[in-house]
Amino acid sequence: MKFKALFYWIVAILEIISLQFEIDIIHQIAKPLLMISLLTYFWDQSDGRRNEKWVSYVTLALAFSWIGDIMLLFTVKHFLFFFAGLSAFLAAHIVYIVAYKKATFKDSFSFRWSAFPFIIIAYLGLMAYLILPYVDSVIQVPIALYALIIASMVVAAWYRKNQTTNESFQFVVLGAALFTISDSILAINRFSHTIPYAGIAVMSTYIVAQWLIVNGLLKHKSEV
Image (cartoon, rainbow, N blue to C red):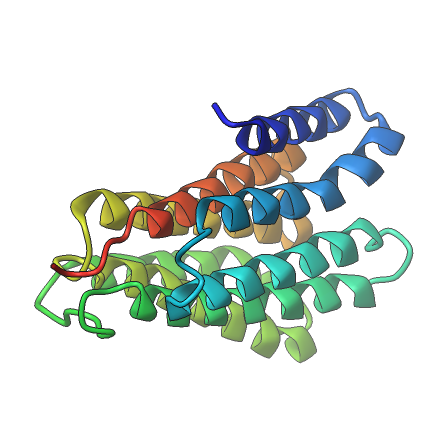
């Protein structure tokens, strides 16, 4: 395993340890380092492919994710930091959708009949049932908007099917699904129901999700 990849997982393990044992100083250092280390790894692996448009969008998505991670560190100080983080991740998901489209054979999605979008719609309905009744009406709209965008991100990942390599498709879909699970646990734990070990669950799924998405896109190859 290359050093940059190993460094990402070392930082990830430190972040999980910091949450498990409530070591705040390690958490304050490890969490901001996550996306920096992943971005460093991504740029190393995408060397020679910088002319492919999706590389720039992935870079931007990781940058927005890094901003979101930092903003969420300060939610204990002021609730507005939570929405700043939410906005950063909203932007990251939108940019990822564009990256998914660019990382296809013909710069387009393959919109064919599938039950998958309806599964995501059902999942959105479940999340709305679990979260929205417990939040003030003033923040229901931004939360619903965020849920819609991340659902669109997962569906966009699905519609890369047959438009990229099988390995790229599988990695990205799984990563997008885990990202959705991570955000769902975060939202449920924050707004409605307490989830045991929520912090560890959120970060574990988030760490793996970002790794799978980045590596899945790296496995994309232009059609020969």
